[in-house]
Image (cartoon, rainbow, N blue to C red; front, side, top):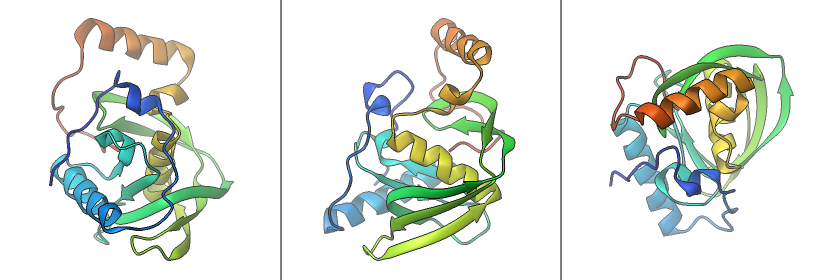
Length: 173
């Protein structure tokens, strides 16, 4: 089922997600719905708060053909390097800006069956994971921008609003 995306200004996007104690049939259904929603929106990452569910689960796809991967209760345990790249967000359609992120991350999480996993990611996948974990902590990518750029974007949103759907000219996470 395609879930309704929450947009910038919705208070749930600023809430910290709660840990998931066990992988239940409801959690599996949420993961499946999030994957369907992410692909419907032409995204490469989605966090549960973006669909109004304040839980610590994300789905990511690094666009390599491997498909979507759920990460339940993900935590970054190591970071290396630094790289700046353009980001967008399904919850802030039409807005793109350069964001500095770690180039490599190590993540520990549960998979969709509840098995523990450790994953080292670099490049696009590392960026997607960091962006989505930020959502679980109530952080939006615009919070990572310098104050002048962030204020300019916020003024633009306040003046013009957000489009219902933006053209997909860059990856939206």
